[in-house]
Image (cartoon, one colour):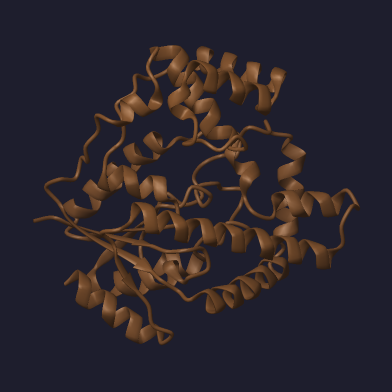
Length: 304
């Protein structure tokens, strides 16, 4: 049976390093499953694998997309399926690594077969959103699609717009579509690993990583990004650090405050990822060791 390895965990848990080590030992290839690492304009702020890492093992779906582009879970799945198939044809083991739960759900549970929505129609919906604002737009969504209530946060712009356009275009809730889905990988041996790093260690890792980002000129990435003046509804705006560094350039906060705010938002994100795993990754193997080599051996044992 064809094998796929999935490696997830909260941000700053060392997933990418672990995947690289595993890939070298089992003749694997790495496929990105992180929605922020797809953008070519953000290598530092998204903690993309280094050039030296990508030379040691083949990496796919990293840094290939413009921040100006919309990119859905369905679009990611379509590309990921091709990369998985290509890896298997080369007798390599595909290793999907990242922190985007929706991407992993698409692999393990499938994704709803919503008809392709006309680009002109999608643009009209986004124009409406920009005109009336997120609060009123969200209220309208809940009015004509009450199934979205409690499932989409009032602050989640991207998911609100997606649910709105699906309901308007198909006259069917996105959650009705989701109820009739199945995985495209039922015939695969899928090994699911979640790196269960303790909170205190995670917090320390986050602090270290933020400092490294600042040292590696992540501010330049944000400066160039701001010059592009992209639509505020696009996902790249959500990358942790964009808002904080933007405020720094407006002279509203100091460098010390930038670091503190990035650390806070990253901790909050890690907490949400852990919460997601408890609700949506109940069948995943939770592994941890402070010793990286021990952790590697644990994972190798689990996937063998």
